[in-house]
Length: 73
Image (spheres, rainbow, N blue to C red):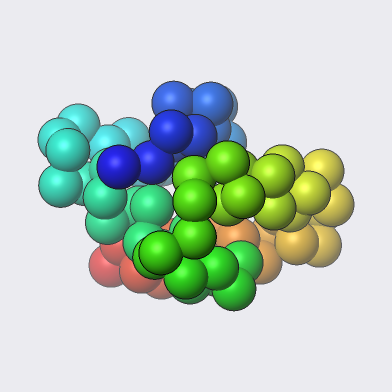
């Protein structure tokens, strides 16, 4: 399970994604990994390091938000 989802609550809330179950968090984790080009086998800290880069770049942040919203439909 993802170690970084809890750090993304503000970002996820801003795009109206509020995971309530373990299954929802896993689905979001997999969608994030796909959006940023990481594999499900990549370690959590490696994924989180890349996610932080995406969250600090407005263009990448927008792409991530769009990818997550589309995957949650």
